[in-house]
Length: 115
Length: 113
Image (tube, rainbow over all chains, first blue to last red; front, top):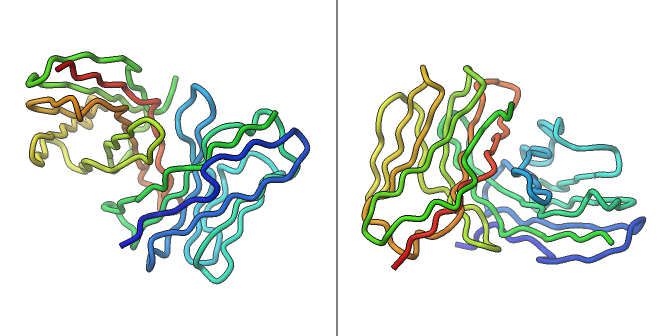
């Protein structure tokens, strides 16, 4: 069974440009999460989808970030326009079901560098 | 004060020894506790979860939870060089509206052959 896959693995862009990150969750997982880790900091929550609906987007830093999950399958996270402080590793995670025992499976992340 | 605190390390132990990793959390309504292992450049991998006070064992790993002290730990017995990685503590707060995990910054473990 394929795990959570993310594309691209690395992206280097200039300040002001647009970047779109993609996440393919494990097949059948309704829950999809985006997290990010900026340099020297801990991994922080960005948002949570249940199928195609945004369940919680309290972690999104500002309106330059737009996440979508059309059809409840893969998800994209677009940053427009990118700023220097957006550099970091963006992780996607998925899970099946919820409750106390919900277990998240993470992708290997997209390393974003904004120059 | 950080919500989840871990010593960044590195924690260095000899092969075959017990590695003890510690984590404290600030939110008393925290409900679920997880330990993830992350090799450099790789995805975080769930290795243990614990929800009730006490110990939970899985192979060489034991998670310990003390909610009164707001403390969770991970013991790795018979440490191997392949255990060298960053160990992330994550906490989920009991809030029906939110399922986000709050992570510590991780402890880097080095197992010396």
